[in-house]
Amino acid sequence: MSFRARIAVASAIAVALAVVVASALVYVIARAELRAPVDEALERRASEIAARPLGIYTIGGAQYLAVRPEFGEARGYVQLVRADGSVLVPPRQQTRLPVGEDVLALARGGVEGTSWSDVRVDGEHVRVLAFAYGPDAAVQVARPLSEVDASLERLGLFLLVIAAGGVAFAALLGLVVSGAALAPVRRLTQAAERVTATRDLSERIEVTGSDELSRLAASFNTMLEALEESTRAQRQLVADASHELRTPLTSLRTNIEVLASDRALPAEERGRLLSDVVEQLGEMTTLISELIELARAEQQTAEPETMRLDLVVAEAVERARRNRPNVSFSTELAESYVLGVPTAVERAVGNLLDNAAKWSPDAAPVEVEVRGGTVRVRDHGPGIADEDLPYIFDRFYRARSARGLPGSGLGLAIVRQVAESHGGTVHAERATDGGTVFTITFREAPLVVAPS
Image 1 (cartoon, one colour):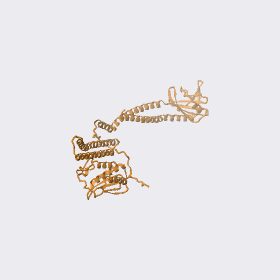
Image 2 (cartoon, helix red, strand yellow):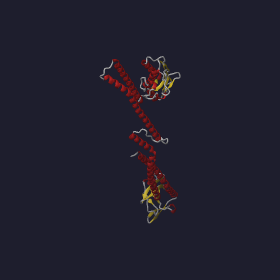
Image 3 (cartoon, rainbow, N blue to C red):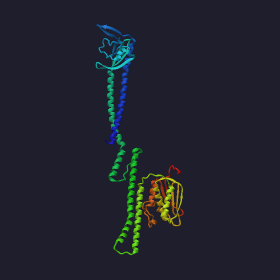
């Protein structure tokens, strides 16, 4: 069963229950209202009979109850029940009412008050009121309920028709309303099916309104946009990596072929070729390592934790000093707590330090500062050209002045990725007195417990 059909069925069931309950209440209330006049008439007649003595007379050896005409009503019944169970009725009343134990108890003085009952007499439904009359008798007065039953029967049929019509209308209305309500879901399903069939992530759904289904469609569009961007970035990464690997692989292959040939090479040329092979292998190793690091950063699943940013930066500076013994590093590290993954943050800071060390002259130090969740790294090199500043964090981008230097063009891209994955930012700018300033900012920890 489709979701739309289930909604229609659920609507029909809900309306059916509501109609049944409402119909039952209407029927009960109508029944009480229709029977009330009958009960009131019986009570009036009982009061009139109780206020005057009943006469008994004999006709043809049989005793009858003398009820004055003004006490009687058309098709009404009256009978006197004695304590011994004998019954007296008016002379023209052929029908005798059934006598139950409750009536006998009233006649014998065992109970007080009145007794109500519904009985069938000669196939007719009647309402009976019994009350004690004197010390050893009780009187039963009754009226037929034929008109009341006929009215209730017509009302029941009318309510049944209304209930059936209401259920049918609810089912039809449920189909119409569910069709309109589920239209965005249907469009969403069709869009998902088209994306599955065509692999076209540029598919979008038109979003109108601000209800839950509209937000679902907007979220679906956002997801498609993210998938499209991720796929585009993946393809670009593969294309760029292939391009970057092609040059060292071609050179490496050429050098190896020359070394493997039967041609005699001078020792100096052979040494140069071997040095080139080692250098090219080193470049490829660095490139592949950074590609792996980039992929790991994209799939980072570690939960951020409260960490000392100044301590992580201090470790990165010590590593940079070991790797670059000819470069001087000056630090100003204030205690700072941030939310982050320590290994990823240290990798990003290390890339900034490597980049600064590459451009920094021997006489000028690389300045490193940590304050309030922000890391600032400055070199005193030639600085980055204005036309290169917007692109230095792009993958594989290398400024014209850096193309002759070792590097893969991925270091700063990793820095940006780490910053963005931590909800932070990174930017670069030219220093006023020369060199470049890189600033990376992380989210500060909301609550810091000082170590004891």
